[in-house]
Image (tube, rainbow, N blue to C red; front, side, top):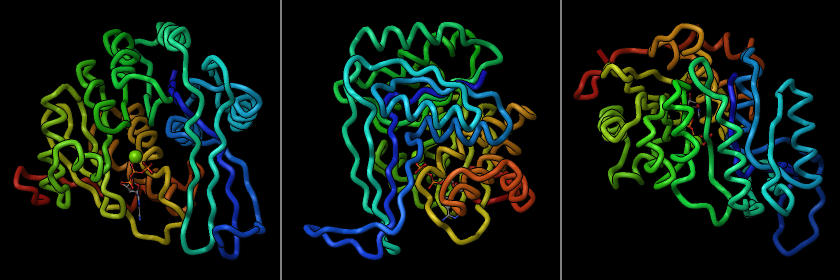
Amino acid sequence: MFCTVTCNPSLDYTLSLPSLCVGQVNRAAAAALTPGGKGVNVARMARRLGLPVRAAGFAGGFTGDALARALAEEGVETAFLAPGTGCTRINVKLLDGRTATELNAPGPAAAESAWEALESSLAGLGAGDVLVLSGSVPPGAGQGVYGRLAAGPAARGALVAVDAEGPLLLQALAARPFLVKPNREELAALFGQPVDTFARARAGAARLQAAGARHVLVSMGADGAVLLAEDGTCYAAVAPSGAVRSAVGAGDAMVAGFLAGWLAGGAPAPALCWGIAAGSAWAFAGGPPSGETVRRFLGQIAAKPLATGGEIE
Ligand SMILES: Nc1ncnc2c1ncn2[C@@H]1O[C@H](COP(=O)(O)OP(=O)(O)OP(=O)(O)O)[C@@H](O)[C@H]1O
Ligand SMILES: [Mg+2]
């Protein structure tokens, strides 16, 4: 089973406006309500790539019910637990044709009993399963929660992927996750070094690998990505070019694509290409693309070995 955990998902309410005037009444030309949250994005992309997917984490109230229903309509099995009290948040995105303004709610806190129930619900995951832990955690949660959720499944042989920032990511590394996927800004913030070249991405990836990560995928937006594989080989691939509708969630699609590619072949370079294809296809579509669209981009992407100095060989 391919299982995603989203501890603070959302319903995203996207309003398209001719222009946005703060402090005045604005009338939207169009509105859409879609499932949101990083693990939720991974689940939607993985499902479109043909995998059986279960979306877990916390969801509550009528908004949590609506989120689960929307995912079920896409063929994603849902196994959300109530966080305690409170409703899943609604995040508002305002598009005025030039910029996107986001209003994100904090979301409900999760009770300790809810964390315990979530951890127990992952007890069945082991060899042959994938577990993706993605995104921020509810207010009040400690920075060690991903390490705690990852430990059991990773020890039993599940492929655990962690896509998180700062201490939340660092504290998960002791569980030896199969994949971590910082973007270049997140990697730069972790070590206080700019990540503006493939060589610097490789150097930062090596530090995460030394701390416990097995494969490190550094996404670099339109420039593509660098993969430092578990066996020490390193690859870079450039993203295809195209008109971007919205790159928000492209990194989540990349996580799904990499894991789907790995499950299909078990080799790092093709998995990197799958990751880029899914990420770029998502960015061009401004949301989840079809599996067929991702496959079409695959042919345009080549992973090249990257030398220690950062030159493409
Ligand atoms: N402008 C772009 N043009 C082409 N491909 C893109 C572009 N932006 C993103 N991508 C694709 O998506 C992948 C992941 O993008 P990015 O590095 O922006 O992830 P991210 O910052 O983690 O995104 P998020 O956290 O919002 O999901 C890139 O490696 C690339 O393949
Ligand atoms: Mg990201």
